Image (cartoon, rainbow, N blue to C red; front, side):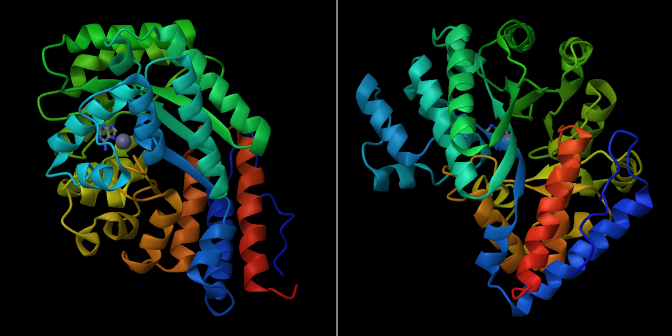
Length: 383
Ligand code: ADE
Ligand code: ZN
């Protein structure tokens, strides 16, 4: 068995690139060695995982959507699971956004937000996800009359309850919803930052932009992101999901992006690929989401393997799992079965999620070590 006592990434001083590479090479080789000793499911389930791109509102379980719709008498929502599944067949990205904005109307009070956060976090814990950075969109609730205090108090209660029950850690990223019809998006950006700084707990870590990219240029959000960064928040906008490389450049140059949500269209610009590599700006990639919103045709043409080959820092994520009929666990299985990645490559993605997270260096070392131990146990089952 490989020596697991060597720290994979030295703590506060930062790891040397050689140490990171050696650790990942060895863990990856051990992962490849599990092919004869464990099934894909056993491999994925045993791996302690981190999720960097998942939306709270997009994580509502079908049963919860139906129950809350009934409880609050919300119209326009399907009334059984089959109809809900059919409702989640999206014609295109804009159709997805329209359904999303209708579905969130079932969330009415603090208790609903607590339930959603608790269920979502428990669902992640059940997949051996140890840590997640989770988007939520305060404005799509406050615009309907829910108070920001209720939204923030509810999600925080759910987070703490799930942590007490399972140890799973969640951090929050409020985001600005691009593309809402008839609203002043700069006012929404200001409100989002104001709510975050007024009501956010110590689990608040970043500011995002979600929703539409078309017609929502990123440079206009520079003041909001500057205020957020001054308050210690990280910059994690969606960009390059439905529009091209220019949006990713803008996210980097105007918003100081620490990571990019999706970013897959960066592939259209080799200079941008070079920038992401040299400045180590990671992309949070969500394959099934891209298929279900129609921005990528099928798994065979998904850009993730190409991005890996080019050395772009990437992680694997689920985005809005029940709406896309997936889970993080299933994204890992798709990576193995449908994207043609080896177990070694998937182990590197799992380690990358730890490294790209906003966790402190000591916790990163712990999680990387847990991943390696889990993989080595599978590779040498009798050990
Ligand atoms: N909000 C929820 N899911 C999203 C996605 N895939 N892109 C942009 N905004 C979102
Ligand atoms: Zn997203």
